[in-house]
Image (tube, rainbow, N blue to C red):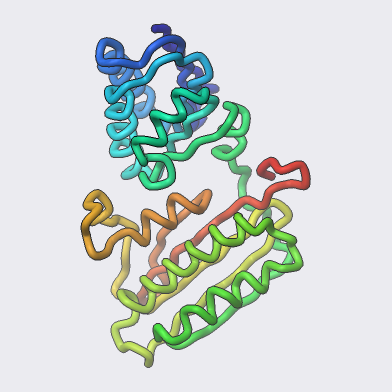
Length: 263
């Protein structure tokens, strides 16, 4: 087993290149090495699995540990280049697409493109604001309206669906937890379009929320998965206090370029 960790300067992303088997013998050493770079600020980790020929339950344990390590930091783990056999093991785990920080790509290049986001441009192409009563009756209509606003951008269907689900979760939290006066309160939704991304900000009137979801680790919990869904589906999720009271959750999603890569 050979492990090489690559990181450019103070970048928040690093590539862990692995060759050989991932089993009980090597996982503790890998965990120590990766923990060191995470501690130094590398909160986005790409595991290059293109030269891995064997992975067992110890490898899955490593992924669970990494998910728990990165999620509180707002980081992500991307599994890149796994062959058919290793991919089958990953699929059996059920982690990819369910664990809040874990996703998969076919190449390291795609993984890094998905993690590296340029600063938000100073001026959007356009903005729209929706103001709705804090009522469950308006949830479906509002999330559909957000997607309708994005139609001129020709956002791919899968990307639009990710945005719709994430916005729906933010809206549901704003109504359920951020509106102490019920329908007398108002939820504001701001949509901004850029050449390379869509930014949706949902504001409520509640007592404030920092984005910590303590129930996310319990798969049988009746709630607490909304933030997990938002973080899994969007490229960036930020929580901030509003002026006066309430919380603003800002959801950012890249728009793929015509060749299918992230902008």
